[in-house]
Length: 161
Image 1 (cartoon, one colour):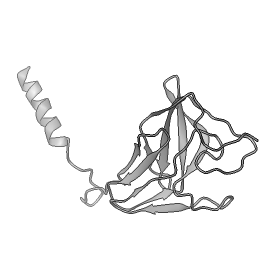
Image 2 (image 1 turned 135 degrees about the horizontal axis):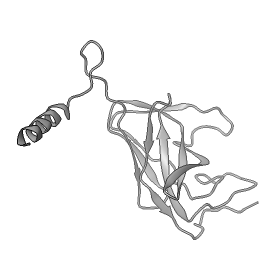
Image 3 (image 1 turned 120 degrees about the horizontal axis):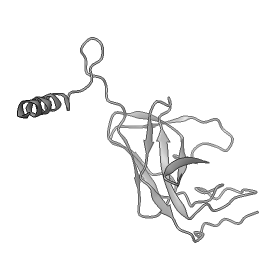
Image 4 (image 1 turned 135 degrees about the vertical axis):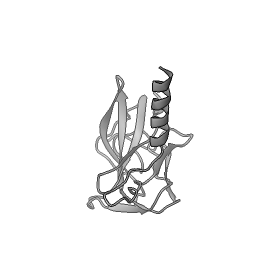
């Protein structure tokens, strides 16, 4: 019995930290190490790159939690606010060691980052939400930690039209 446990321990310890190898014996390149981190104010975040330079979609998603599962809200936010309205989606470079601090999302379905005129908008709090950032090629996805939006409507300059 002890011999079996010792063999299992040796097997696990020898395999746990070895990088995967590609054909030809080279270690596989690690993917981008993007971290989505919430700030103190609900809806405020920073996106940090702790790996090699990465190309990110210039829009990121908001997901809401319902009965233990995450669902896409259909709300896409902007990384930098640089894209003119109606322009096709592009990619944004995030260099190694750099970070992005997108405009805070206020919880509104339309114009929740910037005060854009919207015919119909609604506050979707209270609830549990998270931000999801994706690589430009769609191969990687980074989910931020959950955060709570309060029940009260935040002061945002929105007037429902």
